[in-house]
Image (cartoon, rainbow, N blue to C red; front, side, top):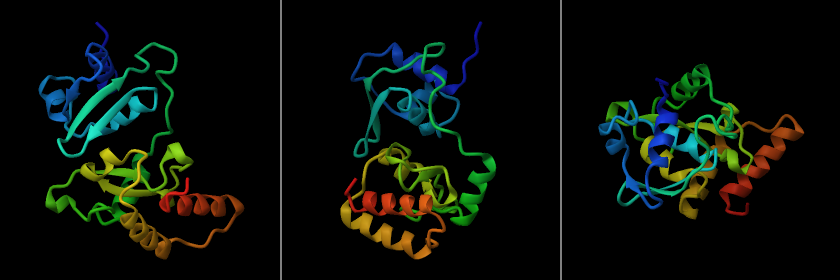
Length: 186
């Protein structure tokens, strides 16, 4: 019998559901589909290979909109480069184990993950200047979407105060993309 990891089990499980299927991470955990309640990363990995899974922030539920690649199919192993454990640890320490968006900390019971300031889908990288600690509440619904524009301006001002001047053309281009993204011009 083939043993699947959480990503593969999740894809196989969702493939058996109807489009429009509504679920929570708790439900997936209770049904034995995933091994941890902190599996929003697996949902993002499925999105990167063609799955469309929306998140409703008000009800804290997910909705299956479109199926993507399954284990063994072309495109299954596609996706973004993983962030190493060393870089994750560095980002969490740098951000004092607190969410850079809402301020929730591990001491408050927040489950932290690593988020991108400029989403990979819009040209962001896994460079430490584009990464920040985010709680799962703030990270999951965001994906590649913007917050309220006033929040974006406040975040941009904070980020730019800490940002070092670009040392190369590539860093300047990244900064320009970040500013354009945060101002809603991308």
